[in-house]
Image (tube, rainbow, N blue to C red; front, side, top):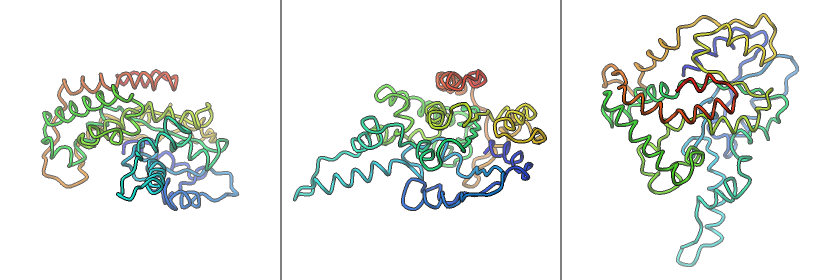
Length: 322
């Protein structure tokens, strides 16, 4: 949400060098005709402008089984094939869907090559693709998610205490999963890893979306050779627009005149405004400030992932989120 506030005005300002396009089909990118409709949205072009999309950015940056466009479908297909081939007259079979995932695109199979970044690389190659990732402070992101989604604040109560209860529950559930399965596997497959994870409130989905590192690592492996991927903090886009604009221009190979970013509201004010927005109607009253204990809990949870992200990108700014 805030990334689009920051980067869309900059992209649209340079329409002489950049063409923005929609990309239908992203919600079913890995299934049926979704991939075909996505590819057809990007025919060959004769002019020299960059052709960019920001559609469904969150769906592509982080993914897990319950997303539309989920790569879990590959395992479902393998599981169904196994089930039909091994069904007994009583209807029983020995097939396991998580085992099918491991054998097709998981730990026992082709592994990383089947995650969305590698699917996109297979579609478009590596030479002419540039990926821009804009990430925001993960603690702030979870705070926005709690107040934005009615299913969170209505279940836990629209108070700072409710936010704290939600955060404690999510952090404890993810730590328990990571102890059993490892953090990367829990980030990708949380609710598919067992009955215990399947019953966790909303499957830790928004806590997982702020992890960043395991997902960015996939994009870096697919496109991040120093020329194909550029990662920015939303804070820097909003609070340091001149520097961020220059870095974006250099990365995209734009003319020098395309440096400035528009002056927008500060990150702090944009974040504060995001807490007053609800996706599903009102009824909760104004958001309450996050408790110090909640902020410390979330900072401690995200800190090791931020450190790994900073090391992956060789950019200390991401570690300073802690």
